[in-house]
Image (cartoon, rainbow, N blue to C red; front, side, top):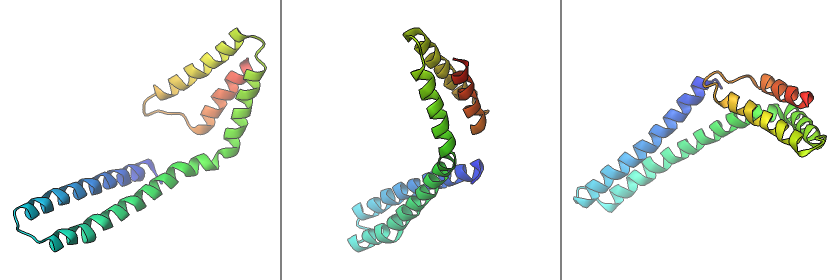
Length: 136
């Protein structure tokens, strides 16, 4: 799923929740003014709100799967990079060196998040971490 499709699905899901809120407000208003019966009020819940919630849940499942697929696909690389980090930290000869490595990693991730809308590809993130670990 492309970022735009992902964003569109999130937007549609948000609109669904707004529709549910608005439907609840209006049906409660009608109920309080005795313009509809309890059966009519229940009909809105059963025929509108519940189906919209099911659709929103289905969208959430798709969104969740789309978020997890890239992570699952990179699982071996993630484990490899984590092992490199573990070895680098394990091989620290003293506390100062440990702090230096950890600060380098903090700065690296800080730079990633501050690159706003120009985040590096996963492979480049892995390469950057490997470079830090290999340097120390």
